[in-house]
Image (tube, rainbow over all chains, first blue to last red; front, top):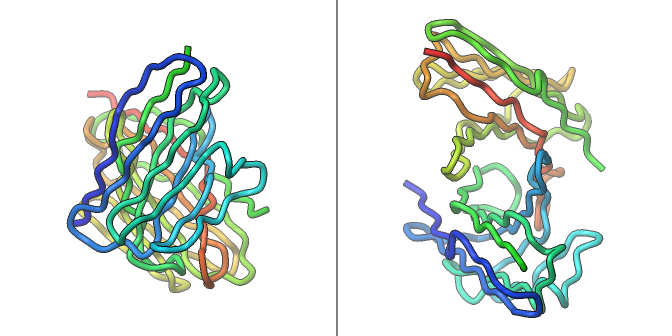
Amino acid sequence: GAVVSQHPSWVICKSGTSVKIECRSLDFQATTMFWYRQFPKQSLMLMATSNEGSKATYEQGVEKDKFLINHASLTLSTLTVTSAHPEDSSFYICSASRDWVGGQPQHFGDGTRLSIL
Amino acid sequence: ILNVEQSPQSLHVQEGDSTNFTCSFPSSNFYALHWYRWETAKSPEALFVMTLNGDEKKKGRISATLNTKEGYSYLYIKGSQPEDSATYLCAYPNSGGSNYKLTFGKGTLLTVNP
């Protein structure tokens, strides 16, 4: 199997708070981890790609100082939404892959619903 | 920007019906095509990664075909069951290289009525 755990599932917090979301591959080593955001009635939009021990690669339009990604090990990546505001409210989901070229499937966490008041 | 299109956007079928839907993608510099199933309140589940033109893959009652020359893939579900109700997503990786990324279609929402 290939299990990815994502926590927390739900976060409700006040504007200005920083929120950390964890993504762990439980039974395999993930060469690459991905962070997506989904807006209502839209598809999954890639925010950034990260490899263990190196800086994340952010997609165009994604503020790297706003969305801090740390990939500390082959099984753990974190996304920190810094000084969150209501417009950051969204569904965030991570995935992990055994390869870095797209020949292997991505394995997804359950996602995090973030609501900023 | 890669264009990955899925049709139809949504589909309602009766239990026992067979159904299929389409994913179209750029046919140049093809590397792979991914299919995922995303049930409500669960995480997306990988169904297939297809790489060879003409390939057909099967998982239970679900199968997929691939035409890389014309840039489309079909997903078939035989004898649909209510538990097949989900959004089916296809995704296309950029051409193989470091730090690949998947471009997802908007999905086909399948509802199977008992």
